Length: 120
Length: 120
Image (cartoon, rainbow over all chains, first blue to last red; front, top):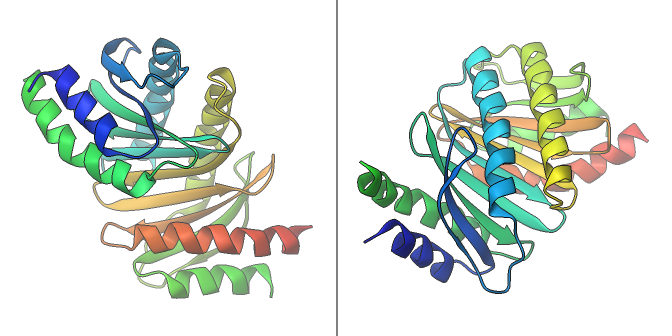
């Protein structure tokens, strides 16, 4: 399965999924799928999430709480789940406010292994 | 119910709960409960989480994804859930790696309303 097919399968299997992105720690998007109804600037998302993740990984290191695996942000209108694929690459799933966060977390975790295989 | 009683009720009702903290955006802990078996520097946690939250709120604002409500970080050994109480105050629940994250999110959300009442 290609990266695009994997991202599509994530979007298709989670209610409320708006976008799935693979991006690098420097904020550059590697691949992405945006649902038709969604109006998202995925490049801006990748840049901002890369900045957040750099800060979080520094903090997790300072407080000695292991290695970061997942970040989840819930806002008034959406939810974003990010999985760490390796030191440099992340995958994110953006859901609408009424999306299925539990399933989103589960699917993203499972598919992360596929993405890692495809990237290696 | 006092703040300490509320924090205790959170710790008591979630499997794997190690600490519950209320802290300000400047990194100062307002109140906290640490489970007996846990070895955590809650002051350091408050400082680092305050820094992360400042960065996340800035990013959420830039990407126009509404207002931040909850942050959840999963690492190799633990999970930390943070709820935004208001512009200046947060509450966090730290769980061990095998803790019940779903129940932790639910209980922290419900108890956040109680904490907000106690703080007002």
